[in-house]
Image (cartoon, rainbow, N blue to C red; front, side, top):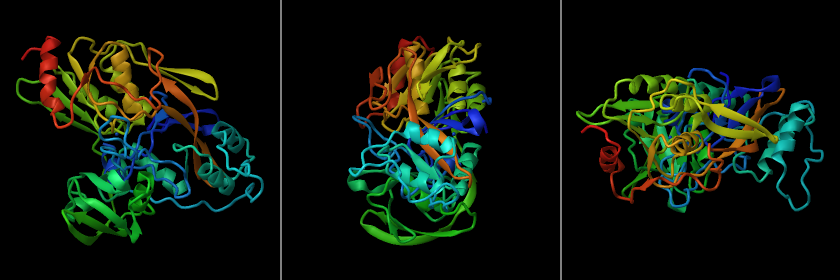
Length: 442
C-alpha cells in the first residue's frame, strides 16, 4: 500500500517510511476495520488518521500516550471517542528489545518534559534508537497522537486499510465518565450475532476494565493478536442489566461506503472511513445524481489520504486540496481534473468527523464547492510519520500539520459548518432546504 494517510493511506517516503496524517485511532473495536467503513486510485497521499473507527485497525500500545481521539471535540458531536468514532479491535504489545536498545538516556529530563517527536523519528530512521527505546520514547513523548505498534499490530492496520480486519464487528466511542459505548455493530459480525447493540456499554474486555481507557487501548484489546477464531469475553451493560458474552474474532470485510438513493431526492453517500477503493466507490455512486449528492462524513475517523483526495476529485476540477509539512518541508495534495463541479453538494459533519475527513470537508468548503452542515468537527490536523524499526515494529510520530486551501489549520479547531444543525434535529431532513437553495430539482 502506498501513499500518505489522513488516518489513512501510507505514502512511501524515503527508505520505505510511510507518511501518515494520523487522526487518532481509526480502528477501534472490530467494526471500523470491518467497515473502515468508526474506509483511489493509488496516488501518493498522507495519512491523517482519525480517532477510533472500529476494529479495522490502528491498535495502540498500552504504553502509548496517544489519546486515541477519544475526547469529544469542542461543541462537536460524535468525536472520535466522544460520539461517532468507531474503534476497531486491536491489542498492542511491547516489542522485544533488539539491537540499539537499552536503558540508556532516552532524552527525557527529570521533569519528563515533552519530547521533540520529529527528532525521535529522525533518530529512529538513522538507527540511533531501537524498538524498546522507541516504545519508551513514544509513551513519554507527551504527544497524544504518537503511537507504537508491534509488527503484527501494524500489519493489522495495513490490512484494515486494504478493506479487511480481524475483530468482532464493533465501533466504539468514549462517553461521559470515560465509559466506552458501542457506536455501531457490523451486520453478521460476531458481536452482531451475540446480540450486542448500539448504545451498549463495554464494561470490560477479557477481564480488563474499559472505563478510563483510551479508545485505542480498547481497540487493541478487541483485536487481540489479530488471530481469527480467538476468543474474547465482553462484559456488557444495557439499561441497568449486566452480562458477559464470549465471542470469536473473525476476518471481516470493511464497509466504508453506503449509497442510498431515495426517490426524487439527492443521493446519500455515507463514507465511514477512507480505506482502499473508497474514492472509486464514491465516483461510481455520484455519476448519476441529478438531484444532488449528500456526502455524509459524520463519525468518519479518517483513513488513507489518497482516498480522501480521490473523493474530492469527484467534485473538483483539479486544484489544491491541502498542504502539509514534514520536518518543515511543505508538500501539497491536488485533486485530479475532470470532477463534476455542477452537481449540488452538501457535506454532513459532526464531532466524530476527523483527520482526513476534516481535510476533505474543509477543502470542499474552502473551494466553495459544498455547503457543510452539522456541528463542529473533531479538530485533528497533525501529521504522523511512521518510522519502521529493525524488528518490523513501527513508531508513528507527529512531525507536522496540514492546512486547508485557504491556509487555515484544523488542529485543535475543527471545521465550523456553514449551517449548524442543533442536537436532536435530523441533518438529513434539514439538508432538503439547503438543496432547494442550491437549485437542486425536487
